[in-house]
Image (cartoon, rainbow, N blue to C red; front, side, top):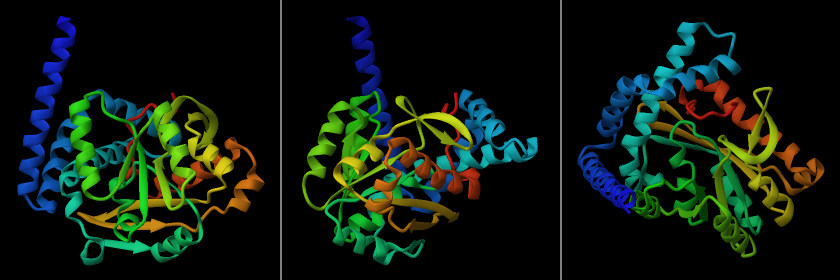
Length: 293
C-alpha cells in the first residue's frame, strides 16, 4: 500500500514537472528551445550509464572508427536527442506547407501510393527528429496511426498523447491490445500505420542488423503478409539546427513482399534501410538501447 502511494506521488510530481517544463519551452521559439535542451543533454547525457551502452554499441558495429570518432558520435547523439526533446512541445505549431525549415522528398509519390492502396505501413527509426516523419502525411489529410511504447507513468502518457494528438497522429500502445487495434484498422480503408523498428524486442524474431543477429519486432512484416499492405520507408534527418529533410522512399510493393515470403526476410530488408540511414548519419541515431545484447 505504501509502495503504491509512493509511486502515485512520484508519478504526480513527474507529471507536474513535465507540464511546467514543456510550458516553459513553449514560451521560447523552437530554435532556442531545441538548443537549450541539446546543450543540457550534451553535458549530462555523457555522465549517465546509457553513455557506456552507446559506446559499447558503436564499438561492436563500427569497430574501424577511432576512439575519438566514436566519442564524438556519442557526444553529438546526446545533443541531437536533447534537441528532439526541446522541439517536442512545438510540434503542433509546425505547418508543413508554410514551413521554411523542412524539405520533403518524394512526398507526392507517397501520397499517390496512399490513394491507390487500401492501407499503407510506414516504418522509420530513432534518427534526426523521428516525431516529424508522419507530419506531411497527416497535414495532407492522410490518417496515420503510430505504434508507441507508453511510459510507465500514466499521467505522463496522457500528456504526451495530447501533444501528439494535437499534430494529427493517432496513437496505439505497443502490446497485445495495440495489436488487436491495428488489426481492426487494417480491415478498414484509408487507415495507415507507422512504427519505429530499430529497438530490441526479446520475444520478437531473429534478424540481421549490421551483420549481427538481433531480436526484432516483426509486427510490420506480419501485417504486410496477412493484409497485403505495401511498406514505405520514411526518415527524418536533421540538416542544420532545426532544419530537416523528410524523405519517403519508393514503396516496397506487395509483389516484392510476397516474393520475400517470410517475416525474417522482410525484416532483414527493412533493417538494411535503417542500417544505411545510421551509417549516413551515425550521430543522429539513438545508440543508447541494448540492441545487440
